[in-house]
Length: 433
Ligand SMILES: Cc1ncc(COP(=O)(O)O)c(C=O)c1O
Image 1 (cartoon, rainbow, N blue to C red):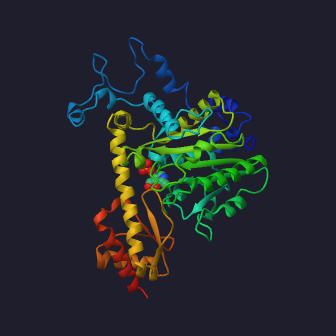
Image 2: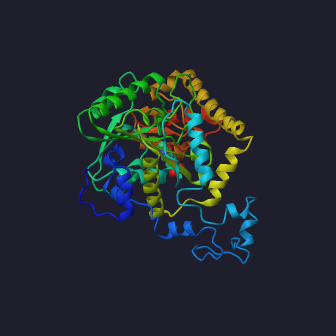
Image 3: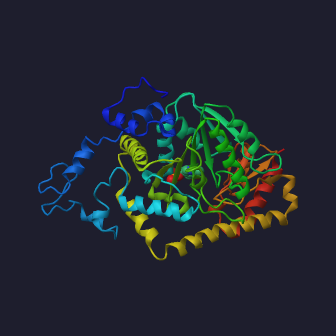
């Protein structure tokens, strides 16, 4: 074990014992080794006291009929049952939602087999990413990630570590396909810890690999694991389900990686935010899988994660969790979701058509391959920061300048404004010498 001298509580020791000999044990960070869910503390004792006639354990107020002592002025702004809004939710998340989400993961990823953990609720995906860092990424650990990548990963994966080693691998090769050669190099070596962060569809480029590219990527990961490397793969599925072309990877990489090799621990970071168009709910999940994982090992990982939930935000909003659960179980949900997906897909098709209709724009910029998600990127030789400012000041148009590229959030742009947006970018680029 890499962290022999870390002093841990008995509860952490018990979880570590359950994970003994697994890839999860080997990949835990120092904080991950120490993480535990305080079962013998307040949450555990409170659980045990559930159903007692006089229950004086809970840090919540109840009326004399043992109902939550809430303020009706709040309740009139929701039609949820007050019991689904006012009390604290369990630290791991509300059980029916966790079970529902797990079933949904299986339904949407038919090739997923083997045991996976019960998803632990997080406050949006961002919180899930931070917890993954806390549990698995130590100072001087190297994070391999396709570039360009979403800037927030720096905030999440570095945490308080002054030294996280970043190993960005260009997403596209010379032919503008998934850059497998450099990933292969990044996962070379033997007997090492690797951390690989995968985000498909990508933010910022809106790229999802084809099935064939993804298959090659999985093979590279598997072959690296066969060389005795322990690999943590963080699958950020924020934009899951938003693919707009045929032949792309439709399932989460988690579906294949959760059961690919005993040395690969796959962590699925997902949630309602983008894939269910519920940004403000702050309902996300962390789910684990590795080949041969037992239910007890899965539970140990859930408890370590819940320990970090409790140690950061205490728990996820009760009302949000019930809204997500009821909303996704609503008979109209799938149809409404599809309608939104179709709107985004229609915009991407319009962008592609519009760009084709204007070959002159290629003198100033060109689009990097995009086929999914909320975004796309334009590459230009011009100073993108100056272009951005001109767009804002002279063309009433907002885009982001990142990594010497312009990032366009087409998910936020009305269909009819698309030609004007790209024409404006062309004009603004022309103004920069
Ligand atoms: C790739 C990716 N992951 C995670 C997140 C964060 O999601 P949330 O708002 O649920 O924290 C975002 C948000 O932009 C994102 O683009």
